[in-house]
Image (cartoon, rainbow, N blue to C red; front, side):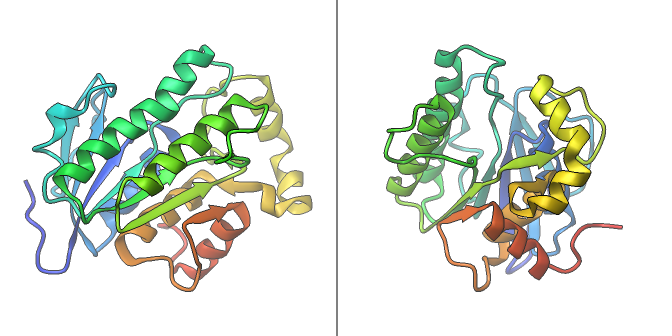
Length: 236
């Protein structure tokens, strides 16, 4: 296990096997301000790095067993989630709300000073009035994180996330959006964000702060502005 030198951060990535989480892991490992990275997920990532420690955890409904792993951490980047329509409404709420709250509970108990980056979504509704269940559940999770007592919480609300690398799209809507992305990004730049750019800002927020961008909520336009301020934008 790599031991951070003075000033380097210990960062936890949840959901590194996913699209955004995978890039978040990559950027955390490459960041000179990060001394160690702990990836927590349901399956092996199949990679190795001197900074990386992998922890398999299959039941996010109970994260009590992670208390020791989460002790002494400086930051968490939480990218665990699922697509609307790919699971039942009950499972969508469990994954979006319950898993987030349970992980935050254990992290707060083990590392009360940790910063927290959360992958929320465009239209997240903290009032709970939205007709869209996804918006209500993301809003509920946001409220719980803000009330958890972490010193810094960053809520990222991307619109359409462009995958960058080829993948099997979860449904027709995503296949359509990927096809029209080149035109869409020109006509509606604040309604799209690259997956790698989103991950870059989520990691940067918990490691070095957000600069002049005020939080805790970062809409798609805010995320794009943060990307422009970060150099280099992405690895060559």
